Image (tube, rainbow, N blue to C red; front, side):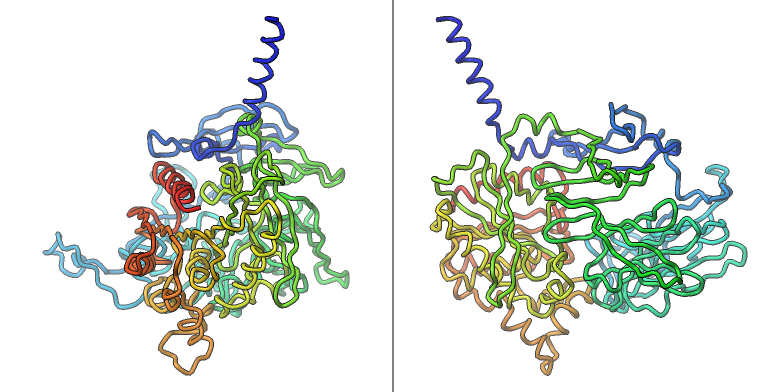
Length: 636
């Protein structure tokens, strides 16, 4: 009897352990893995694991190495990483070192103009770009410096002296924006050499070459008017970079360009996709790159024929329901990458190019995941109102029972042009949503990379058009399933996804029972008047609101303006906003919340004064998660 009772207790314990689900607290305890590079001897991977601390309200990092063939990770000190990995900022001849720092180049502060008024808080601007992303322009710009590689006492030389331009590019550029030439005689750097209003209305970055001996600078991409970014050299010394053609279009097709014997060769011109990142093979015969394809991000290769008549061919290397992210490096027949899927955060993998097999190298969060009952994600293809085939990801709760009915969330992706793939977010986390008992419907609507350039571009100047039909087609199709509780549908999203929520709130015809909009565009007219990167709205809205003769613009500010449909709002809505979001400014949320309140609609305003377009601080992130699910529990 005692033995049977013990067996029952053990069985119950095992079953209970296996039935744990992902919670917001568990999500924010996961280690966030990022690769630093392959060691100089090619035998190990150096990487960092950053773990948020809710108690300390900050993140802490540890550094490790692991063999490229797999094995145990060894913790190292941060300073050790500099010795283990090749430092791209040290010139090939080891004589010089590159760095960057902010330099004061213009007067904008009151005390700049009136030194005797040093306590003045005034800021004075004669053009746009007075603030960007989450920071006001205080008159400083990022500049590239080089110095003799002999220690900290050497005074570095500013290669952009007195220029009111940025390299690295703000707000997200890093040391990938500048590199040494193979002969160590020049520096290639990325810069948008425009100022003020011209800067805010253009995407025209160029590659510049600074000659160390003559101290002169040359524009290498003057004839291209869109983005030129990510410079790198082939093993034989050919400059390579990513290029978009059209000025003002931040989501244009991104191609790989190689400068070879005086000619710029576009290797991906005839391939219907957009490149995210790339790396040359050691023999210089091909380039590996990542790109979105059919709801995932995969590894591709393109051959480099030079000026021969051999055809340029793009081939997909990997496939599966996962995302391949950063290409860390290549070791023998193995290419080292990072990888995610909807149930697993980033880890580092090795892919054998000959055997076509995967080896997971880092296993930072495997123990946590082994204790969880994880959701299941499925592909579904829905026919849109214009007869196209649209991929819709459907994420089902752990221990899914098709005989039950589940509340269901329509997820609206931001961007508006961004891939909806097998990503793993620490905020908009599908695995977490499903683990709380919700079915998640995530459509690859118009504006998604990975379905051809025409599909991606159709959303521009059509924010409230076909894409809204795509959303409704997705939720209506999945709602046919017996396991969907059609009386408990919710709609959620951020950025353009937040715009989608506001817009659908006025046209959903009582489909949804609740809405959540994070940093969403509510009023396209005031959005144009307050956002910082004006080129974005010029392109996507078709122009300014005062251009009465522009049909695209007038459609954006009237027919596609969510504000104009508030009279049809009848559903509870949670509105979330970051105070330092200068892309989609606080007024958007204020206008939406005020409208909902004055119309008597159940609504809540969740405001983060010190957060930008995202929520980055651990305790703020936890408040976000708790309020998100609290609202769903209250209203759905």
